[in-house]
Length: 301
Ligand code: GLU
Image (cartoon, rainbow, N blue to C red; front, top):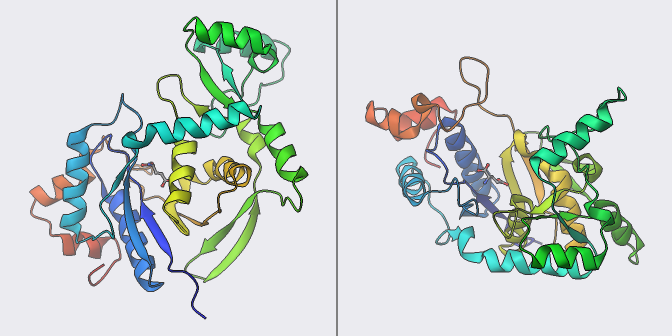
């Protein structure tokens, strides 16, 4: 019996132009969706007001259309749904699973230096940032309320160990994790989540009432995404995503983290590397068919 129709998504952040690496990721999503008889959605991940620009969104959509990619629905734009992400954060806070963090960069640097004075390195998260070193988790509710009411800038952190404890304490609570899918081999392997590597991860930023982790997992659940195909630079983030999914009762999609396309210098392509931007190639007269061929995608997507 056929299961529910698979749902894939391509979820660019409009903070630069699409380059060949994005094209490869979008084309792979389209190819796998078509192979599995699934649908492919486009989601614009623009919750970062400091970096997202409408002109980049326009350029991204034009470039994707030029590449020949069709999406099943009009794109979902995350900036239009900040209130939904904020509601998730409010629930977590009410349930004692999230707390405000008032640490500044300066305070964190000082605390980390103090702890490292003894010789042992203070742990870093997979992005290289020190794990939460401040006293925020120990503050009383009254103190938190006072500082928030006074307008003190704060992020929101997940109480990660408490989140894990609650998940496991639920009747039949299974440890969070995900199925890593290898589309070439056609198999799946269970990966246990190890969210501790992110410590008390930031789930609400000082400048936005959300974070990438919350917005992406919320939307994958809301949109019924069954297959997440994205770059391996986001594999580590999946440890936090699987925890949030288990905590919030959201299904965990299957994940495939593909290798990143590297530049001639062996480093991952960045949006500032104009030479591989799809626009630049198009301006040089390279056709979409040629781009697909160079990336190993023959035929139409
Ligand atoms: N918006 C993210 C990015 O452009 C991708 C998110 C995801 O695929 O989970 O890097």
